[in-house]
Structure formats: structure tokens, C-alpha cells
Length: 252
Ligand SMILES: [Zn+2]
Image (cartoon, rainbow, N blue to C red; front, side, top):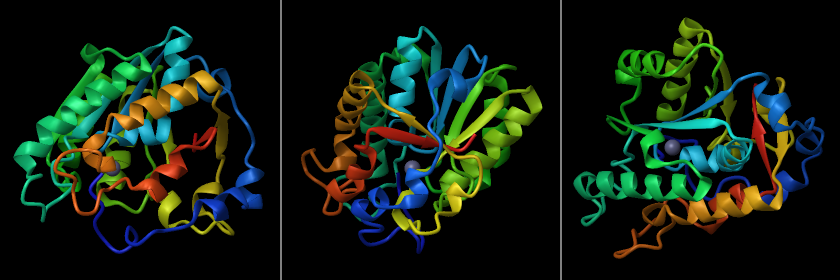
């Protein structure tokens, strides 16, 4: 991720506030079969490498376990995460984050051959929306279940990724399911906008949760567990805790 803009600043909504939210607790529980219906393939679209694991790492692990084919599409390499960092320039970050994504996917049981690194510019996906939609329409098949960041996630790339994916899914005849990432940061647990529709929570069994945590640990440039460590990692502990829950939330 490379957060820009007003909503993604500071520590954001505390995890304890989310866990205490009656609105979140009231979201109906789903399971893999119910969530993806009769889809035989899962395509997970991420604006930046790590969004796919943050939002759907558990779902991916469950789908792999169920014998489904899972493809992961990283629209950008997330190379603009640290624009002011003298070491972590785009030239260093792009290959580092590609490698992290490969390791993370392996941890979830997805082979590198199933990953598409689209290489669109981090931070400027909106300007490349047509290209992204075209690329996705070529990858997605009719009947696929396609996951993408929420269309109102509060990050320009996340929203552009959703628009491109929704367009491609409509064109091809695939089902689009959205997942929040940054909405957990700025959302109000008393009135979460993303819970207004048909949200569903997918409980993660221990094995899927473990795989997700192993996958998250692969994103060292984002968690700050790399050398040199960025001054302000994108995924510090107070952000990561939101993705250590024993469920994932989807907007079908
Ligand atoms: Zn992101």
C-alpha cells in the first residue's frame, strides 16, 4: 500500500473499537461455498502487493485447501510506498515487493505461476483504469469469483482497482466481491459505511489464519522488518492487528 490523502493518516480507528462494535458483530457469517457460489476459480485483484493477503489471505488459503484454482493479480508493484526514503526508492521497492508477494502467495499455497504482476504505476491507477480493466477482462473468465478492494476504500488506487475490476467482471460475466482494507482505518465502528450493504464475515479456521499470518510476515518492507527499516512503515503493529482477526469481511 502507499497511502496518500487525508483519510489515511495517524493511527486510525482502534481495533478495540471495532471489536466492540455491535454493527460489526451483527454481520452475518458466511462460508466459502456460500460466499463464492458455484465459482471454480478465484481471482484476487490487489492494487499493491499485500492488499490481497490483508483482505483475503484466509479466503485464499481456504480456497486452495478446497482444491480451487486461485490467481493473484497485483496491479502495481507498490513501488511508491516510501517516496521520501533515500534507500527504498521505487527501483529497489518494486523488485523487493514482487519477491515478497511471491513468498506470501507460497505461504498460502499459490504458486508463482499463478501471479500476474501487471506493473502499472503505484499511486496512478486511476489514470490507467482503461488499461487495468482491459488486462483484467483478458484474465477473468465467465463464472470466476473475483475479489478486489472496496470501491470506497479511501485510497485512490484501491478505488480505481475496484472500478476497473467491476468493469471487467461486467464485461466477462464474473462475480465481483469487494474487501475493505483502509476502510478499517478511517471507518466509524458505530456507523461503518461498508456494512450498509450485504456484508458477510468469513470465520477463519486455525490453519487458514496461520497461513495468513505467515503470508503477512513476508511483506518485510511494509512491516518494517527489513534493513534498512523505513522510518514509518506502512504496516505497523496497530495496522496489522486489524488483519490478525479470526475472520475476514467481504462485500458481495
Ligand atoms: Zn494498497
